[in-house]
Length: 523
Image 1 (spheres, rainbow, N blue to C red):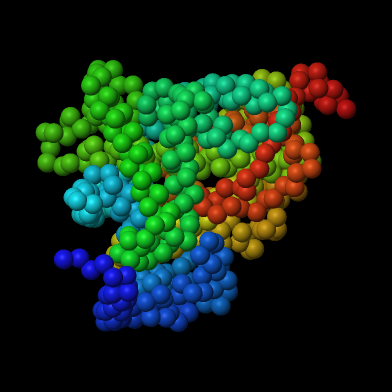
Image 2 (image 1 turned 90 degrees about the horizontal axis):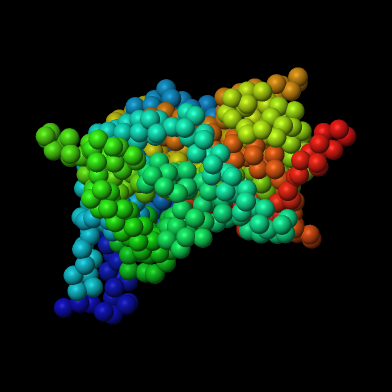
């Protein structure tokens, strides 16, 4: 017999939360010499003081009071927050092994295991089985499984061209198609969200699937929509509430439900691709990342391990599509917006392109000869700050900065506080390419430039992203001047999302003809 009275259900939920809170309080002996922080309230912890849409803003403000290492409590979950370059780098580099784990986040449990493989439905009821040792993929995997899958992914990406000429050629080929698409608008306003996502996604598609998609392909557009919508929704207040009170929020509608439905559809597409790849697999003719994984899967049958499972392959592909597409395309969209906002900087980049490359096809080795363009790209990444926070967990008990953090402690690292550290950037809140230039106009590295994080969980596709950003950005400014639509006000505040994109906007891509380029060079 089921209880259907909503008041009774609510009272039971509150009672459960109260009992859990008491039980959690009994573990306080684990948190002796724990970092200081604001006093939490029962059940909700410190949620009442957080900006739920932009929590890192609240956390940075709290760091001014409590220091670069402090704690907050979200619901009943205690977590440690690390702010500023020195502290974040110390944790990720000098304590790399100790901070190498990922926390258990409910929404990712449901994405990775719930909807993908270990959930079944019976008479409208859902049952979820979670086993941390089977957490698949790369981004949120744990332990030895994560190590094996990360090693496979990095090695395969490198072998398929990451940082090499073969990948550079793929990017230039994709750019040629992107250029035609931009020119088709004839300099009139258009929204570049889907187009940029499509261009960047096709680079990863060529590695994973062995082919590219047309930008108008409905299957391709649907897949891009599912991934980008999930990346956006993961930063929503409803998802934070779900991660805090999963049992309660499972009964309520909201963006967390949309994420799970989108993930199911994405995984269904991927599993169909895997099935087809198995049917067409030729172990003597490896063509894609999927082929290599499936060959490893066959080899593994002779061993006692089960790392090369269909579940891991599905999540690796999903991770690569999300991380490899959305972050790079979002950065490029920020790049074009900032060039429209600061036309004099755009003009300086174009002048350097003309002096070093002219009308030839750019290659990565040109970057060394282009200090200003290199500085602008770095400043775009710093200013855009598209991944403001990253989540880690302690893999073992550790004493850090004089505080004791027990194994499994949820650690929140604020990359915003690194990329806008006043001790390392002269004008942290402004778009200022001189952050990466010396007084003679030469490019200089800045140690606080950590958009890809650092340590054992740093971005696996960093070299690929750097190559994509340089070639796409350079070729776009080589062939177009980007302007705001007539009368448009350009807003360079970030939108809300797990990855923070620019606010919705349109662009005008005005072609730069050879005659115009020559005249501009003369004058």
